[in-house]
Every structure is written in structure tokens, then in C-alpha cells.
Image 1: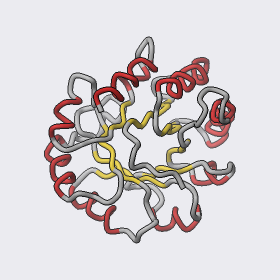
Image 2 (image 1 turned 30 degrees about the vertical axis):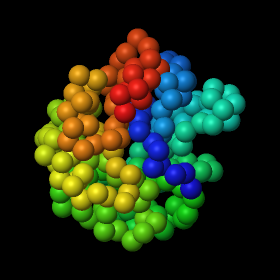
Image 3 (image 1 turned 135 degrees about the vertical axis):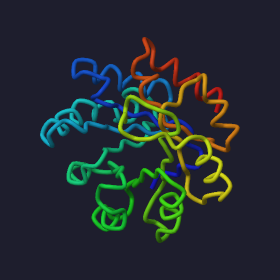
Image 4 (image 1 turned 180 degrees about the vertical axis):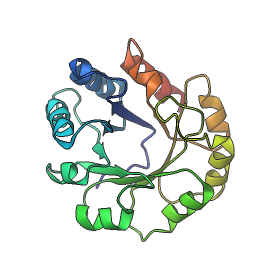
Length: 215
């Protein structure tokens, strides 16, 4: 099992921003930039299309191919896809497979994360039996085109979660940019997920390095 206590930057390879023709190149940039985790997020694609996208990037995660020690690779809301390959983790949302059921199917040795959008959901994530979750995410902190239907939770939720001093690693997500990172850090966040600012950048690796320097 990967120890995420030192993880600071979580990258998401999202088909909403990255066309298939740039899939491998952008993923390589995420690795070169030093992403501590990488998630494959393909919500509009079929299971077969997600599998094909995963197959494109899997060779990049062989140690020494791009980086000496590749970060964990996680798939969004596709348990069967995760189980089809060794060591790949899973991220679920509040309306996806329940974390306890997901952990039962995943067994040990694979990362499992959960999205939360309120104090109650964050508390529930922390109250799950030890070993169920490896991390949880809090957001969307700010408005984000990645999830336009979600109401931003704001920095208050970040402060509230930080005040509980979670034993689990937790990440702030949603509309975070380099210009707003300082406010997230001031609210008590120490780990972030950034999607659009990285994926839309001319040099995603350089952007990630800037975040690492600030974090």
C-alpha cells in the first residue's frame, strides 16, 4: 500500500480536457512534473473506451520508463477496470459504489479514495473502519468547469475539515489555481487536486512543479 502522507499534488487525466491524440503526451508531462497520484477520469466514455485509454498510458507507469518511481494510478468510478490490472486504485463519489463495498472487492494493497462535499460527508469518510479509505477529497472549493453542476463549498469547509485534524490524507479539489492556492493553504489545506489549469497549460509539467514549490 502506498503511503500518501507525503503526497501533495494529485493530477487528474480527464477526457473533458485531453483528446485521445494527446492522452499519452499529457500523461507523460504529469509524471515528469512530479504528480504524486494520477487519476484517469473518463466519465462520458464507455467501459471499453476507458480500458483503451488506460492501455495507452499503462506503459508510462513502468518504473524507469518516464520516472524512476511512478506514482499510483487510480481510475474514477470503474471498479471492474481497476480490478483488471494489478495495483490500480479506485476513486468513488458519493453516488458511486459505497466505500465499504468497494474495499471488500478491491481487497488490500490498492488505493481507495472518496469525494466529499460537506462537513457531514467528510466526517463520515473519517468514521469509516480503518483501512477502508486511503484518502478523501473535499470540494469543489471554487467553481469549476470540470463539475459545473456542483455548488462550490468554499474555504469554510476546508477550514472545518482542517480543524478536525484527519488521520487520513485529504485533498482540496475544485477550481484551484496558482492564484488561489495561498488561500487554500491559509484555510488549512496542504494537498490539492488541480485539473483544468494543468491540463490546459502549454507545459503541464512546469505548472505542477510550481505547485510543488508552493506546497
